[in-house]
Amino acid sequence: RFKMGSHESKRNLIIVSNRLPLSIKRVDGTYQSSISSGGLVTALSGLTKSTQFRWFGWPGIEVRDVKEREQVCKSLDEHDATPIFLDSGLANEHYNMFSNRILWPILHYQSGVIYEDGPWQAYRRVNEVFADAVADAAEPGTLIWVHDYHLMLLPELLRNRLQERNKRCAIGLFLHTPFPAGDFWRALPVKKHLIEGLLSSDLIGFHTDEYKQNFIDTCASNLGARTEIPNQMQYKNRLICAGRFIVGIDPQKFADTLEKPEVQDRIKTLEDKYKGIKVIVGVDRLDYIKGLTQKLKGFDSFLDDHPELRNKVVLIQVAVPSREDVKEYQDLETELSTLAGKINGKHATPDGTPLLYMHRSVPFNELTALYSVADACLLTSTRDGMNLVSFEYVACQDKKKGVLVLSEFAGSATFMRNGSIPFHPANMTEMSEALYAALNLGPEERQRKHKFLRDFVNTHTSAKWGQTFIEKLAQRCRHPMEPC
Ligand code: ADP
Ligand code: G6P
Image (cartoon, rainbow, N blue to C red):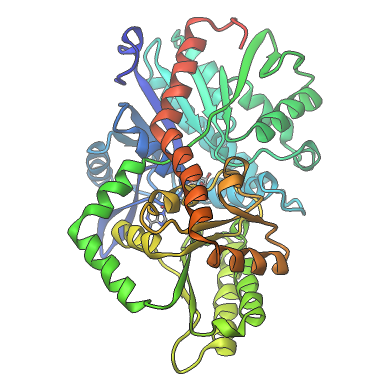
């Protein structure tokens, strides 16, 4: 049950996403869980302090044996999570082949549409499996909040099943990615089915006004939905609201972590190690939308442009392994490790290497310490729904007041432009100049920028994001035909 305004306090809340807060792996015959990475899990985990919910999703692994399934259910139950088991072939076609090879690129403005019918059928099937599980678990009046592009058909499938079972529930969906301009979406052969699936929601949330408006325009052009009233769509005698809900982090979690003695020790060690050296940090899932190739090339240009900074600057880049069964991600990893080697080959001296490229996941304490010691954070997304790393860096910079160097194509740039140094990620000269400006910014301007960003991060938390969405969804549940 979630704790909200008095008359809402009795409602159940179900969250549904493909990714659960814990991902399960089989190691030496036993199941082990690890915290999942990604903005979706960060945002929803930040909501758990103020709001209670049951979280349904895919555990990340096939488990056939009934006893073993019980074991996995038990470990997830401690986190109020319920696994939806899928066999590995189906999960592969749904997650890797349709969601991540077909949908993800279109949502992020990658040209060249790949489409195959098999993965599409698997996508439908998995959405059906999710619909069955959630429709069984929901009670009349439950608020059901679906997340992201893996489950675009779920609102429609779920609505049908709930009707059959005579349960009236409100269905909301939040898209954690951009929604592209109409011409990109138009290229997808199954575009209408997906939009129709989404339009069975009562409320659909986006990170920015731009994504929201792209979606509304697409509903009008693809399906003839009526969209004359702002933030409102009328389709098949139903009224659907669209809204912008600014996602965030839990800044207190970073403040608490920074106070831990072991983190303070680690910060001190890193500060000693990098005395007299400017540290630039980057933390990204290893994904082509993060512009990592551009980042390394831009850093190479920066080193070319400023030979006087040789041995006086280091870029520490954490590239968290992601979607490693998808060819494009494998190719990118090969490209990046080659590029990292070349850059160090070109610029290293016996006194040091300018680039520390880490292709692995980093524990939370270490991540926080890294954010804290960095003079600048360089984020180069070519497109990105929001980018919570930009928030996390700011949350760890109260002492140092380091500078955020932020691609204009990260969703967060919509709100953080004023407090960061923006640049175009394909323009190496611009990136190099932005980095140089960041490292040479005077204390007053750094203070001003930090204050602007810190206020934004403090006022737009994951808890506020979630509560605002849930309140609006509850209102939609009470008055489904009331104008948005
Ligand atoms: P995306 O959702 O595309 O990965 P974001 O920047 O919005 O991009 O979110 C990434 C999130 O993943 C951040 O909250 C970051 O702290 C988190 N993260 C990075 N490394 C790890 C890790 N090793 N384990 C768990 N979460 C991580
Ligand atoms: C993005 C997506 C999320 C996803 C995350 C990590 O933030 O919007 O839905 O969970 O990336 O990716 P993964 O494929 O590991 O779930």
